[in-house]
Length: 509
Image (cartoon, rainbow, N blue to C red; front, top):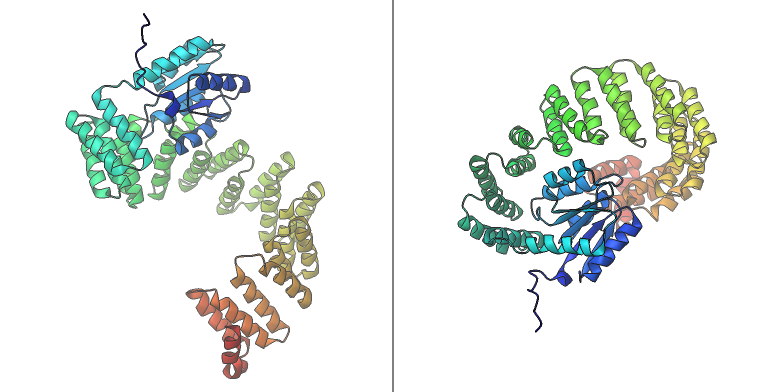
């Protein structure tokens, strides 16, 4: 007599699993196991950052994640999942090749459902997957209602979701998660005042449930009420301080409110958790700047640049800090140091060139750009910057040459417009017309180019064509732009306008 196995409380063919591992053989092996177990859909990714994107776009029923990966670790993915407003308790299995006691304890503390050591046997991993899924899909009544409500919320079925959360509250009036989840659905439905009341009630009855304080803070931020948002964020972070993004958010609000010292403290907390955090490093610089400590501000801007070599904003803020100290020469020294240590970073040369122009040292500006062009002849930004400096110095012929080279590197609408303007200033009107006309056919910003061509027609002694083109530009404009164009039309040739404008407008129409 055959003994039938009890039916599993879940159907894997209707489920989606996500496997995160940067080692192809391991990832593919886990995928084969899951497919063999009957999973209908198995997603793969090689990094935690990619996994977070997939989690935001898909309904995931199981996550199997390696610990140590590039950029974002499995621990960070697990932490992100457990912090979600909906679906925070989906099963997560952590995989590791080291198996240290510290890693196992940390995985458990962060809420991992199981832990698998490499190398693993197929039977072992199947057993653990079956175990966590059986446990997950055999919840007590309250948890079942909450999970069903989460699923409907993610799917956008908000009316049905709120009914389930209300049922969960009736089953357990003290459930913080049920109250919070109902508040989140009310917020999604646009009932902000009701949602805020629910969250505030939740913070009163469950003072350690940090997610309610977070939801209140987010609502006040959307309502442009920074003072109340700051209070809620402080309460949230007292309960759950290890959130670098939220620490930086609070610090940003504190800077805006004038509390630079408070901002420094919270940026520091952010950097404890994420030492390379771009926003926190720049924010720390801004906070020290606001407190009058320019030396510390420059230190953090330079540190941000070291950690993020393409972060142009860090250099720009550093230069601005030196300028506020009336010490532009220190900015020059710092930028020269950046240029010499990192020859391939064009933004440092361009910022330095612009600083030289401010210091009325155009020859030095052109020299630093020419050095860059020699080293990196394919970098179009050098030619554009050089063209602008030459044009502002009234060296129109060489400006035209620089913009022509920019077009050879990148034949974009913007570069054709810049070349056309330079040609116009160099009195090469025919060539200017051709360059502007080339941009006109491809760009969405036809109003600007039509206005430029009209200016060219005026210079060429063709006011009738100028008026026609300005009217074409006017037809694509609105509000203030239209009034400005009206003034431009009147300025082209008043006598012509008085006698001929109606005909020109009619012809244009």
